[in-house]
Length: 615
Image (cartoon, rainbow, N blue to C red):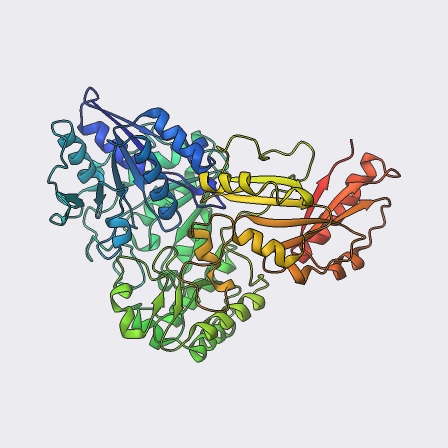
């Protein structure tokens, strides 16, 4: 018998999004085709997968003693997943580790031939994974099935390509089969089709399917049954996994059913749409179904850039459709990509003028990701594109925009949108209760090394040197996790602190790659983001936050003795925020009112309030 364990690790800052739909498909398909006397399949519970630190994850996997570990790899989790897999193999040498997902591509050798990987599944995995498990019930060697990469006798092998699945209806629903859990505050992913009629060179959608939809769409009855399952389980947010929802044949029937079944608007839906095909009738159907948030993906209004990425957009029709969405009260996510081939500063300015002239409202800025498996990755040399070799694969320069200009443009456009240019997307916010006496997620030197994926450590500044060995051991055990280290009292000198931090163990990861643009020079592996150092300094101390800008952030510790808060003085002091403690002259109610006022002030400025409540 084979015991199979499936695992998908989350987006670092938002584990609520981590519904392991791919693992659910694999498990549902294998359970339908393989004898339970030969194969048992388990998906690692989300309470562990979403929140456990690296050491805790390894311990949980090893405790289950699987014969096969299957991992779904995405841009945000592949580095961490493979590191965890390597540690699992150290503990279970004869385990078979299988990886699949968008990261597994022929042009991504660091994943394909990673030492921890036995088999990499290329393309859709349901049939391939099932055949692998079936073969392993009869033999130890890797079965020679289509759609895999593996090693045999030290030789790297890639088998024949696996054709796209002809009829998606053959794959059982993991929701209706009871294989997936979605918390009420989580996100249910409902896949509509595996098809896209477009061929944008930066995108992976529909890459295996060709231009014909045929039976590459799930039946409408099943889609509605999955949505009803979510409703019955209290799920409020549903994300349609579909590149062009308003182009699939089931669109009208789906919208009419949702308008009826979701008349109380308990469920809100998220969809990606093709903007040119949004007439008044389509927008009315979306609004009636409570499709509350949509992504319409402008990317660029520069015709040269659009041609370079093979993106066919009728800009006038697209703009008209987008305006109709906004007029209907639907939240529109309008994407602009910086760093596209054949785009330059004039082209970016043209895109921003188009957004303004067409009254399209706010936009979100994204940096180009040169993803494995895309046509753009193969064409990068033609456009002088330099990109990170590992996730998130951000562009670091093109023949039209050198790194310095690209970084400056990003900085200016983020400021223009009211976003801190130094903010690292996906980096979890600090825990607001980190400095409270009864704080959760607290770790201290001497505690066990297994822990959550984001923990706090509070030390007196004078303890930092002696705690170095324990902190290094924690980082070694949890290299992809975020440690917030709070140092209370007179801070060490900035140069000493910088040198001390640089001496801690460091393995570049996904969030470090996301932080790459903080560096004035191209940083292929990114900029270190953990441990994140916070200096908790009494308000009376003479400290200049700018002196610690690249290594630590200042938190001013303020004793609140009066409901009249010195907001202007706090603003002038700079720093990351305030730790408010209650003075002896305020009762609990007055202190709570002062905290509420301070939090509103902080939210407007983009700083943080920590609170140490009165006893």
